[in-house]
Amino acid sequence: MKPGTRSFLFSCLSSAVPFVCPICGARSFDDSPGMFCASCLESLPFISPPYCPGCGGPMDGILDVCPKCLNQPPRPWNGAFALFDMTGDVREAIHLLKYRDRPDFARSFGRLLGNKLRRELPCPVDMIVPVPLHWTRFLQRGYNQAALVCQGVSLELGVPIVRALKRCKPTPHQARLSRNERISNLTGAFSTTRSTNCQKRAILVVDDVLTTGATLSAAASVLLDAGASKVFAASVARR
Ligand SMILES: [Zn+2]
Ligand SMILES: [Zn+2]
Image 1 (cartoon, protein in one colour):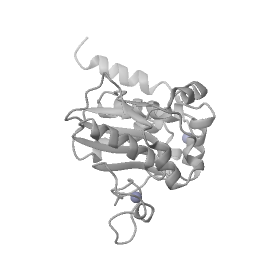
Image 2 (cartoon, rainbow, N blue to C red):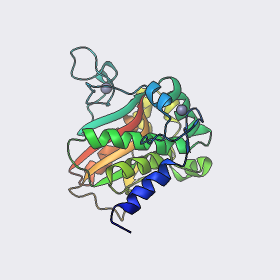
Image 3 (cartoon, rainbow, N blue to C red):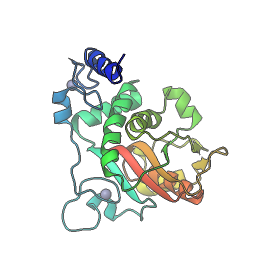
């Protein structure tokens, strides 16, 4: 077989196998990175530049950060990226992937997020680190949605996933807490795993949703304390 023939055959075969769009369930042959059908992809609420350096969300006006970040403490990271505003289909999809056993959404969103990061990260990263769940929450849900998002991101960036963080204590659902409660809730929540060397590494830390940024901030701070040279934060959606 001539060189190139195999990849040509493979691309013909893979484009002949339909995939099911994770949002509308339509079967499609399109070759989009997230495996969303063309019409769902077009309707998704992608955040367009300029981006807020605090959260990766949309900027408006003349301030240095978005209005939602104005009242937040300074971020520990070197840059933040978010794919969507948490509205409409995205809100519904995130709810399904968190609470209704639809982990397939997470990988699809991860591919789209990775595609954006490939174009927009200011420097290469050495590892992709998911925000971990406490093992009790993991057993409840059966999967860590942030780790599944990382699988899609890793495919697009060609960078390995490293489980560099562990969650040391179970924390109540952040969604029900005030900002101050979120911060104290997360004090001491993460530590690095013993086997991971973060020294002088550029790290991308990933979660499904950024609300106040308290969770990603706590995770990023632990990685920086462990010697990371740079930390970037990425989330599928900015609430
Ligand atoms: Zn669709
Ligand atoms: Zn912001």
